[in-house]
Image (cartoon, rainbow, N blue to C red; front, side, top):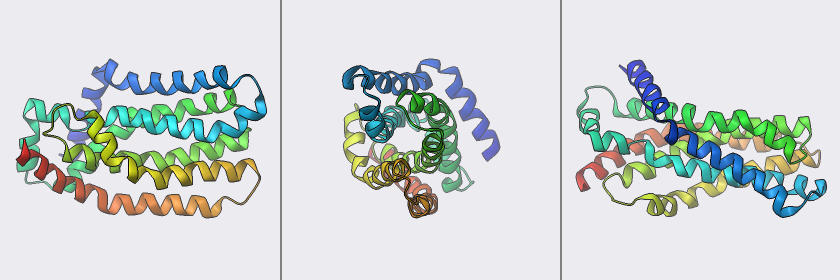
Length: 221
């Protein structure tokens, strides 16, 4: 059932070209605007690259969070998920994973090109990919909790951003901190370990909390 749900989610999201392409285009366009605003100084671009890419990726993911459960709510499929005999936690995990594949993985795949645009070295680009691989699932899982809580609220975009933005701060700090440490040739093992711990902790608790939030949000609608 979970494999079927995962395939269905991926096919449905891929058919909605405007939906999954918007965060990717936003990510690329905003990052490309910074060289125009900061000028062509490679030192300035290099020093700001970590913050530029991470903040822009965070905002791009925020744009897509409303798509996790909203279509299920509008089509009445959410009630079937809540009444399903299967574990709601595993269903939420499957939906979050499909969301990460469709919306976050393209950002990671395009990030090396943008990294070179901002004058990152090959080593720093490799570290960037690692931090995004560890950090973007955390952003998706935490965002799923907020999306579930506001599932019954109209015009939820701004409310959702305000609700979950404080929880994004730690992963943003460690993501940019890892990049800054790599740029100054410091040891990054500690940063990577912390980001891995945040990912494991989020995987352990976020799907369960999202399931509870879905029940609360569905009852309030």
